[in-house]
Length: 112
Image (cartoon, rainbow, N blue to C red; front, side, top):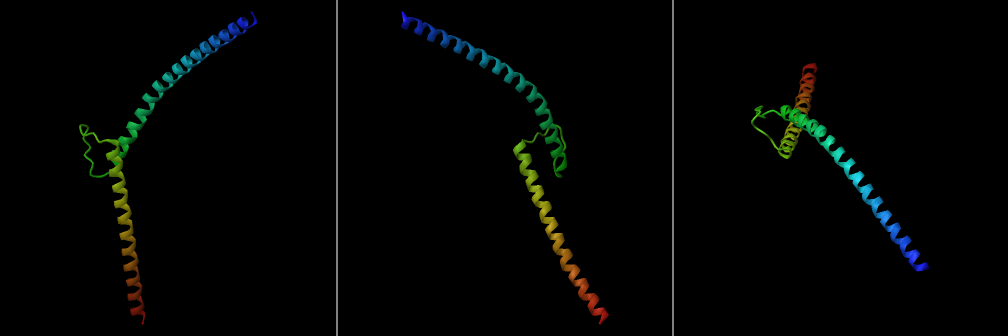
């Protein structure tokens, strides 16, 4: 009789635990679905707007509504444009340094 009670109690605990787990997982699943639904709508619009802004910043982009650019392609074009701008800055700095030093030499010659 004692083993039967233990077995029944154990079975009852397992059943209660299983019910609790199922209920908890069901509640968590509902919450997650609710969050995902809200978040995806909001964040996708925000991401879309930011991608459109980025697309408008890069010169050479056709501002045609029909032309859609994939995000990875847009990021690659952005990186290429940033590299181009850096190169221009370096070239301009070197030109300033070169012509600036020549200007000092000319001033020294005039003074002498």
